[in-house]
Image (cartoon, rainbow over all chains, first blue to last red; front, side, top):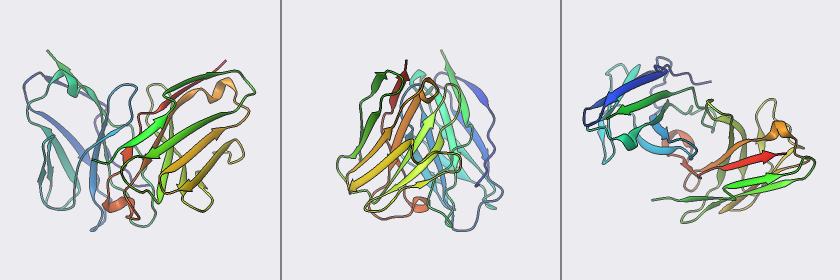
Length: 110
Length: 119
């Protein structure tokens, strides 16, 4: 399986930037890094994905290291509604399925 | 954006009965859909990959005769939990990706899940 390593939990003060790290040292050259989040009792929500370059959208920024072995998801101004479990994954090109690890439980604190 | 609708959102059934869960892609066609289950405080576990017009591919340890998957059209996949037992109580989530792209270069879109309780 495509394995990623994320801290099990993190706290962030409301209004501050939340930086969520992910290690994916076995990623191959053409495999994308994806981030999803899951708010309690809902289906996961797609956030962002990238290959080599840093990416930004209306939800977050994704910083990928030059060697592509790790990445950081940045929520620039965390709100209470950003409290969720965040999953970093990289689907393998060799098989068409998406495996989730345990993710990072982010708590945004007032 | 791409929307996946899952129905019902919550179902309670008696032990021994069967339950059908529907997963629809509302504004796009999905060649492939995926079914996951999730127990409390755990991550999503992939159960099977549903392919339109062909048999589903089940993950190791998932009983195909218990969890029947049908993907009869490009917008609908169904999961039927047959002869449900209390240990089947879980949160079931479907997902789909647009068209025939591979998952590695196209994001998945998820339904909001079905909470199944078997009494």
